[in-house]
Length: 68
Image 1 (cartoon, rainbow, N blue to C red):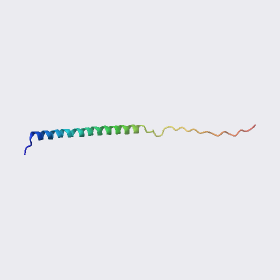
Image 2 (image 1 turned 90 degrees about the vertical axis):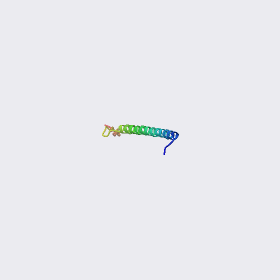
Image 3 (image 1 turned 180 degrees about the vertical axis):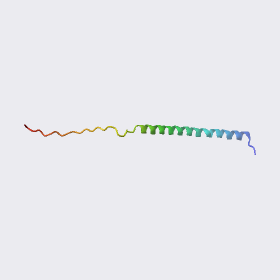
Image 4 (image 1 turned 135 degrees about the vertical axis):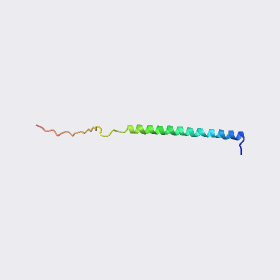
């Protein structure tokens, strides 16, 4: 069974058209994964370092005054 030339050309044209959406979807997916990786890396880098210096401020009440 042989196909005529028009049918073969139409089949090839549809194959070519089907590749671009897959390639585009792969590029978009790769860009999204890259952006998520960068966001995660920045979030991990911004976390506080444990064991740092902690400052505490305390107000002392005045002592009672005595008369000499």
